[in-house]
Image (tube, rainbow, N blue to C red; front, top):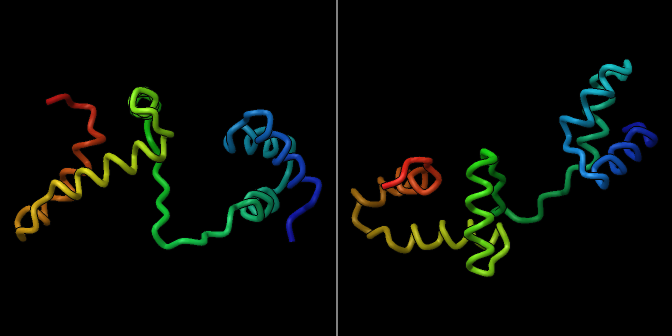
Length: 115
């Protein structure tokens, strides 16, 4: 069972805009046991309701580019990423060789290199 005071502190810190790393580090420095901190964070994780949900971690530069593109296309960020992935999957032909290259195409979409 997670410490209720610690869970309340984490929720409040998140509301104020701190990320999990910025919350965790001071707690560790103040002597909170890592196990209690992790229990509190894990109690706050949302219950996954869908199998088709995906979490990705993006570099700040990539995130800024995607946010600008989303704004230009009048999308939210998640809608923009969904659109990019959907279009790349639709464009892939159904031949065996091209289906195998789908992973490379998806990586290429988020690559920093410009063609």
